[in-house]
Image (cartoon, rainbow, N blue to C red; front, side, top):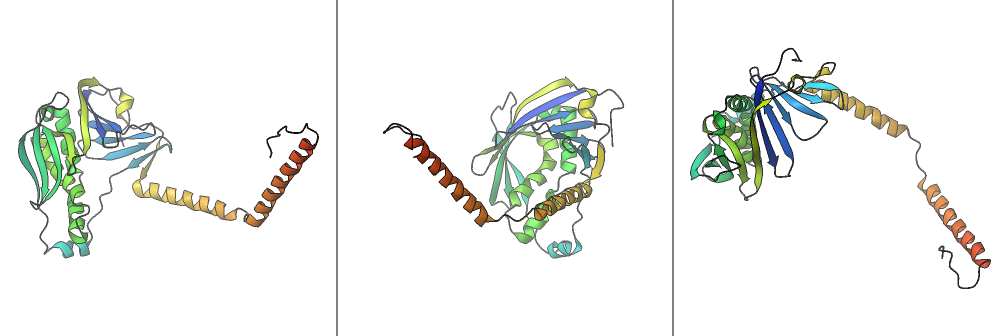
Length: 277
């Protein structure tokens, strides 16, 4: 777990937007990267050398260690041993448009030559930045695409394209970062809106907050599970609501309002309204 120990060097900031119009920002320096998804409740911090990744949760005051690779079970490995694995390709289509000041090359992500997953517009120029290149390489190492492809080959192709996106991550460090991603229906799912360099970061921006408890993912799950259990116990302990009694009280209240209106009206001039009629 790394905290503030030394000054943070200058780096680069990549800003982007997804299909839901949610903005995110990736701050990258020589050894670390921070991912902000637009929420003030926390952020993700990566050590680019080791690949260790943490989620900072300000609401809980905890840091969650995300390093917990799930090993493929033996029966799944045996089940796919003799099956033909899907072929994922990033096929060059030609020059793409200039996107936010960066020239791009158009690639198409295909599975088995028949399933069109997406169109990616990659910028070779952007990947020349050493910080960006290190970040892209680190993200590719942490990809679970292989496991997703294994599962998809067993249980259908519903998640094939999502898995394919993880597989082609490996090629971005050589071909360029995706400035724009477009799904097979023509919808823009992701676009880089700005790349700023050099940027100098404050030490606290690129380190984990001191005093936060460090938890594994399993420990955080257990904590939430226990909290939900306690909440359910409190709900179960509440007295049972007698709906018949509630309805009776509502009818009595309505009758009292009518009686009050009748009494008021009897003392008013003919034709005047009380608002209770």
